[in-house]
Length: 324
Image 1 (cartoon, rainbow, N blue to C red):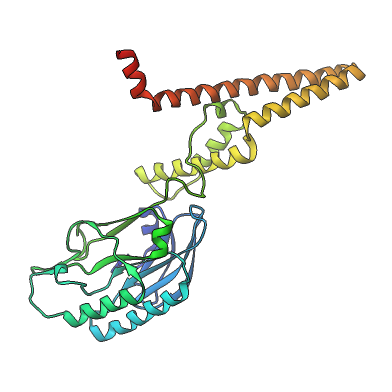
Image 2 (image 1 turned 135 degrees about the vertical axis):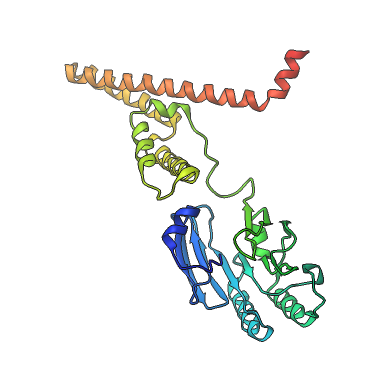
């Protein structure tokens, strides 16, 4: 982002719901990331802030470059050369680069002036070609900068081929200009439907029967976010979801495996009681049986929910059946 304001990372971190990572040497490029992510800075200069992002959402690091180019053609030579240098070090790593390049790429990127900027466009085009970058296209407003009747697309996002292999789609949206002569550019990336990553979250009704369930939810929900309003609720929901997924994996476990283990435990307890019929051994059997009944109810919840989801998924077919 290009703040053009007195640095106040805490304020903006709360506003966007992300952790402040750092800024470039001039303080004109700021970087925020999701909590739990890390960003290793590889290059820091006035025109480009480059590094590698690591997140639990993706298996491998992503190379990310934020640009705030100089206004003159000669000063941008350093930027084009640095882009080429970065491209040569990535070796197949997914790379996205975006920001204010302070120049246009074609005549379609400008209206309101007849000034010849052919040489600048060639410089930019050659840098993009040398770096093997592609423009994923955009929607929203056609121009990202405006002043005194002059409109230009100075801000854009570019990706390399490796990026297109990791993400199924990259959607770039030019947002409206509100508090600046530049409009924000939003890039959203979609992971493939079938990926080597974590499965989509689905709440399991059987969880509420576990004695530790409400404590997990309560602890995650009450953790401060530093944000307010709807953003505060969104962050809390995300934390609860993450906590439940970890709890399900580490504590709750697989309900079918748990049942099998409990059946084995009951068999062992009954065998021990037959060898030594004491009140203590009888109590052990009763305890295992009570836990087994609870697990059975959980398994019933699991199959009931699964059946309901399947019924909803086949809703059109079911409706047609009853109508006929």
